[in-house]
Length: 241
View 1: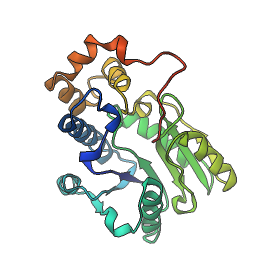
View 2: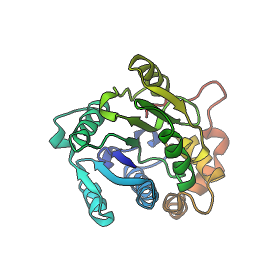
View 3: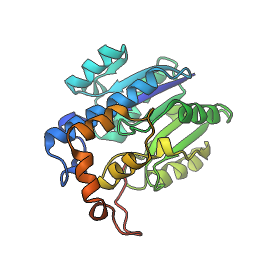
């Protein structure tokens, strides 16, 4: 069985790359909606035995209580920065004999059960030291990363983390595989990602997020300016998940 780990920054600081399109309250509202979509899917996934939210944010603490999830306050880990926080969190899980860990991010509103079952099933068929990576649709970031044993793997979130994680797997004698799926590939960092979400999400995907975009009339604004929001081919934004 797989354990899901969600590192979540303070909501007030979320999604700064959308500042050209959204106000600070809108960015916070959008991230909250995405996070609820992700947690709703994870909490119903039969292959996941537990979920830990790592955050200092009070709203995240409320979410953990609502969904009966474990909250691991970031302040208790004595770590700063995403990589150090994830490393400390998987080490804490390892002390409880939890070694199969999926690090998943909260900005994946198209996440669905079918994609997760495929991802976890592929990971379970590999050897003792193994990495399974679901990248973003540009193959630059690491949207879902499954590692066994997770505490023996060194995380490299940031620019080009997709390639850095595969390189680390080779250095650490982890077998590695990549699983590409539209559901796990749609992370939201830039306006063009919201355009992609609205164009490709189904009725069963990202409903809290899509509803928020419609209620705030953000979808309407995106539709009116779609040509201005998508960068020219060959000039994609930097992906750091």
